[in-house]
Structure formats: C-alpha cells, structure tokens
Length: 267
Image (cartoon, rainbow, N blue to C red; front, side, top):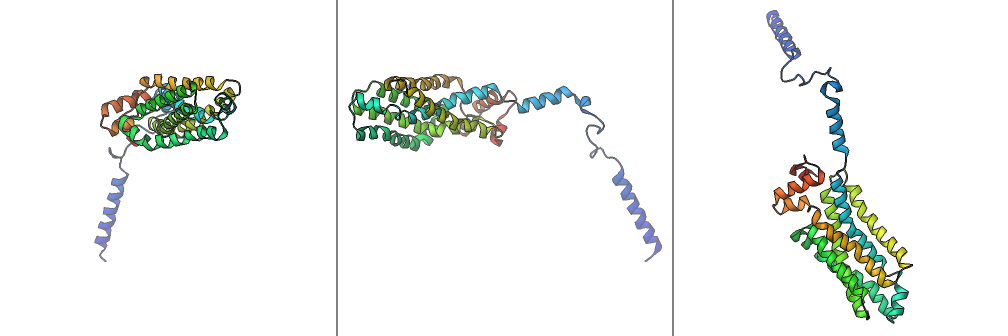
C-alpha cells in the first residue's frame, strides 16, 4: 500500500474526530448543565409537583354523588334480612310469600342490568343514574305503603330494576371521570359504599320498623337525584357522541383548568 494513501486516510480520520468533538447548536442543551434548581425557579417546580399530585375537590365531590347509588344498592340488598319478622307479622305472609319478596329483587336487577348499557350509551351516564333512582324511589314508596303482598312484590321489583342500572353505570361513570393514576382507588369506593349500605341497613333495621326503614331508604336516592344536575356528565361519553366542546369543559371542571381533551383520550 502506498504511504501517501495511508497518510491521507489518517488525516481524514483525524478531521472527522475533530468535527464530532466540536460543540454544535443542535446537540447542546437548552439550559447549561451547571444550572441548579434555584436558577430555573424553585417555586415553579414546586407548583408543578403540587398540581400534578393534588386531587381536585370537584372530582372528589362528583365521585361522592355517584357512589350514593352504590349505597342504595347495598341498602336494597340488606333490607330483607332485618325486616322479615315484622313484614310477615303485619301482612300475614308465609315463608313462601316472603321468599318471593326477597328473591324478586334479583329478577329486577337482571332486567335493569340487561338494559343498563343501552340506556347509559344513549342518554348518558348521569341521566341513567337519575333514571335508576326514580325506579328506586317508586319501589321504596310501594313497600312503605303496601297493604298486601303484591305491592311488596311490585316495590321490590322496581328497586331491583334500579339497582341493576346502578350496578353498571356507577363504576363506569367513576372510571371515566378519574385519571388513570387514581382510577383504581376511586372505583373501589363503589364496593365500599355497597358494604356500608348493607351494614347500616342491618343496624338501623334492628331498631326501626320496616316501613320506617323503607322511608329511610328513600333518602340517599333523593340526595343523588337532587345532586345530579350539579355534576358534569362523563367527558368520555360526551366525546363519544360528538359533543367535544362539552367534553372538554367537563374535563377541565373535573381535573383542573389546564386539562384538555387529549388527556381524556390518553386515560
């Protein structure tokens, strides 16, 4: 090999090494690496960290309104146990008749669960929750003022239809309004409120008359029904039906002023 070729090749390699070591405007950082936290502003970093980790109060209150439906679910399930002796005595029911009263709730729940998805997708999650509470309120009133077994059956069936709707729409709504890092904790409140409804119904039923207990069951239904107009609908459902401006507004209301529709799509 010629010595001139070797020397020219080594010269080109040396030039390439010099070029790669020279600083470039495209590879240099936007901020010098020697800058500390105080140089970029500690207050700004703290505000970003606080804003990312805090949970908006509106989101908490909206979730509480939604899980009132879960409490109604639990109270409906727990109602038949502490009231058995009082109902059988006052209305002269046999064991077979009271068994129908206890089990007809599940038949109504199956009916409500079958249609819950269509109602929630067509009318929205918030409307579906209100619709279910109307069923529950009518059912509790029918039980409260019943004189014969058939009114008990009708009331229990209506409540079953209502909780069948709630069993689907409440966890779906809570999951759709919460960010993904909080979704598991917030949807777990659904199960917690079902257990609370059952436990409190057992407790109150040990001391209250069965008609009074039915009237008490109306209270959480009314609370949710009256609060529903003040909470936003699901941003995901609003975007699904093409109401993008309302979806963005609902998302900002739930998660803060500077959230956007793209966050809902990511979560």
